[in-house]
Length: 405
Image (tube, rainbow, N blue to C red):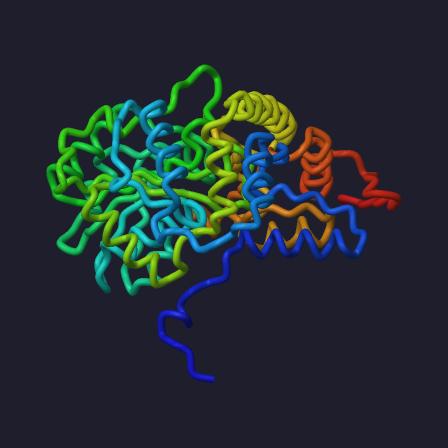
């Protein structure tokens, strides 16, 4: 079989692989605990369900415009004004089949082969592969101070003649930290000065904890002309727990949105009109569901932090948002892929290896499940790794005994 050079260099999505692994194990009746997922357990907002059912009952489920139905674009405009204080036009907005597609189409619109995209490390597992899909070069920027929070100097020193864009994801997947206000101000000003595209992946923007407020990139932008290279990506998957609806969007200059719309029109056409109606319902409906999810996640985070502190060898930075923490398990095993596989094999707990996010020895752990899943999952991990844990462990009806001697 002959496949392209690009295809040969693209790795499988580790998070989607874990989701499939969890589904297979559950189908077999195994009591698996998935601490690697990025899928809130909240129910779909009732306003989204009502909007979907109402349109479904019309029987008129047709093609949608390549850039999204007018009702959804209007809802996104309202969302942008309410949450960013920025009034945009329908020509500044494109709806997509998820924030991932919006980001991918944006990269298609701006990148040439061998051009470079910089993003802070640790990073979402898909950034490098999405960039490589276009024959471009991913350039992770590891903070020099060893923390999860970059400075403008960390980005500046990686900028070269082929740098085309910077991607910023704050709150960050996988670490859960929010970047400083100073960093956001600096990166916006730097990209404007250097004429570099700045892609703000704001998918977790409203899921922040401890009284923190979401940072707004528009507060620091000066160029709002058609020459602006600021792109804001968002969607309904995380904040509304609507992962299966696959609706996201991009807000950018009119000229760039037109180019992106042309690309999307040939790739997939517009997203499902039925799912767009659901997104309209969520965006225009009662917003208490977002706050309810945020509070639940903050509580779940606190439970996971307390559980991880019982380990002698685990180091973890308290997340400021999202539903992930990025814990250092290198005291037990420096090979994160090996460690992740060990936890699946020994105790049926799924985690994301830190190597997939650019940091070896770490595991990404998700706290978007139930309290029971968090506490039992961490208890299983402790049993598998920590010699100070009890010798006996129950997984379902099975009693496991191990001897550390």
